[in-house]
Image 1 (cartoon, rainbow, N blue to C red):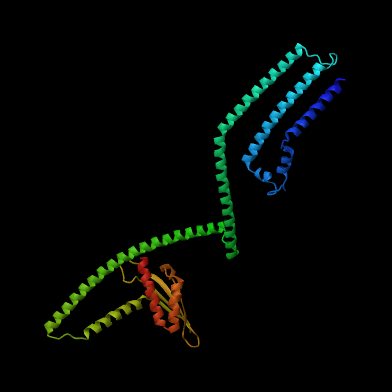
Image 2: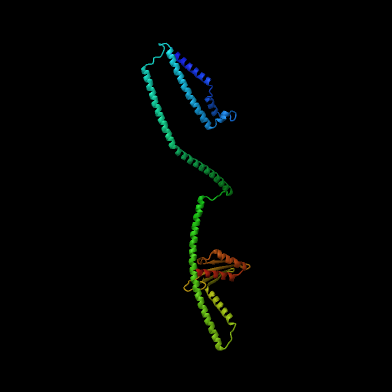
Length: 367
């Protein structure tokens, strides 16, 4: 009997709620709006209300109005339900009416007090959460701005990476393999460092040789000045001798003097020829002792050997092989240039004189 009564009560409450909705002609369409907003193919311009609902401010106002209406509706429902229960309790039989005792009221009051305490705790927690949100909002905003900057920086880096890859692809197309790798570049750099060190050492040696040559040039200039003085004294003596004899200046004296000087130099060079040997019909071997030019005191002689080879049929100069030139610092390339220039002209005396002159100059630099 009690279950039937409770069922009737719920049916009557539902009917009253439906009648209340129908009487007020409410525009509450929560389920329809949910389906509209979640649909991927919702109409854009057909319904003005749906198009206006896109605005967050309009949506917030609609939600606030609907929430207020639902609260009023809930209050009316609870009020009507309480009135209905009260009326049924009064008009029903005493035997069928539920008995409400003081203990029930105390239990209900205790339950209400407990719910109030829970509500108070929930409100306190909500207030704390709101305060925490207000405190964290600036930090969250700062982190958001930082994240935006990092996102922009990451996008910029991604674009730069793409550009760099495109540039690298173009370079690889312009410069096909084999390309210079990092280890090969390091090895080449090490070789260049070694070459630079050796060149610096050679430069220092050349500077020292230049200083030595400068000193020798100074000595040679001093010696030349002394020779000029001796020549002036000799000329004065000749003039005095001619004046004493009453003879005029003879123009043949100077050419004879030059011839005598050249003959004396030739004589010295001939005596510097240590060995001369005809090895075969087309080969001649000559050995010379080379002195620095100009001659300096306390200098040693360097021995140099020449192998002069002629063509068997035409007896033209074919080649010249030099031994002992490397000790004087004469490179093979320089000797090959001298020999090639004189072989083309078939100048035997010229090639011997050029090699000896070069050897004398290098001997002076070595000393």
